[in-house]
Image (tube, rainbow, N blue to C red; front, side, top):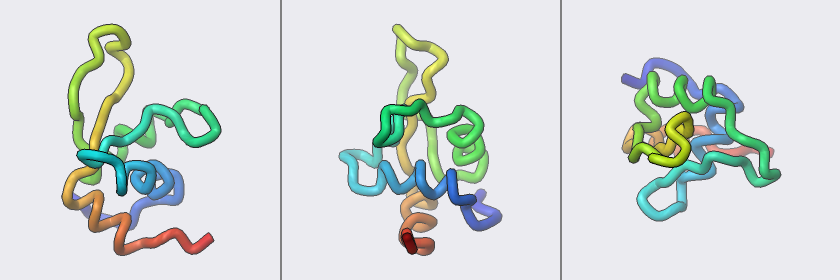
Length: 81
C-alpha cells in the first residue's frame, strides 16, 4: 500500500520504467550503475513495483515492473530538474 511520497532515488528508479514495455524496471541506471537493492525493495514494500520474474542465472537480481500505484506516483511527482 502506498503510504508516502517516493524519495528522490525511488522516483528516479520508477521513472526509468514509466514508458518501457510492461513497465519493466531496469537493473542498471543510464550510467551503467546497478540500482541499489534497498531502493528496489523499498519500492516493492510501498507497492510501486512488483517482482516480474526470477532470473535463473542471476538469482540475486531483482527483476521488477511498475505497478499501477507506481505509474500514479511517477505521474503525480514529475521530474522537476
